[in-house]
Length: 155
Image (cartoon, rainbow, N blue to C red; front, side, top):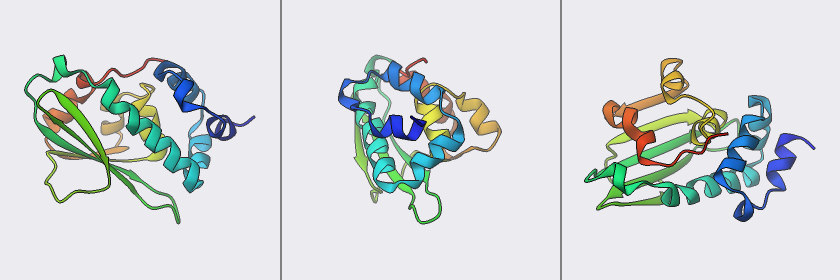
C-alpha cells in the first residue's frame, strides 16, 4: 500500500498525533504531493490536522499571548491554496477555515509536504525558513516561538 493509500484509509479518530507523525515521517515528499493532488483527500487531511490544533494548544506556554496566525498551504496545479487561521487569545486557541478580514500578526506560507512535515514534528521550522520552504510575513519573533505553544508530536 502506498503512503497516499495508507493516509486515505486512516481513521483519524483512532490515530494519535504520534502515530500520524510516524506515518508522515516515512512518507517521501513525492507521496505527500500525491495526497495533495487529490483534492478530497487533501481537504480531509488538512481538516484533521487543523482539527487537532486546539487540543494540542498549550495555554500555560502561551500565557497572555494574543495573536491571529494565518496559514496558507499552497496548492498544486488545479488544487487551490488552503487557508486556515488560528486565533490565540485569553488562554484559548480557535481554528477557522478560510481567510477572515482581520489582520494577522503572522502569516505562514508553505507547500503541502513542508506543512505536513512541520506539524508532525518531522522538519525543523528554522531549517524550513532558512531554505525558503516556509515564507513568513509579520511577527518573525512570534514565528520563532510558535512551536512552544503547541504539543508537537515526535515520530
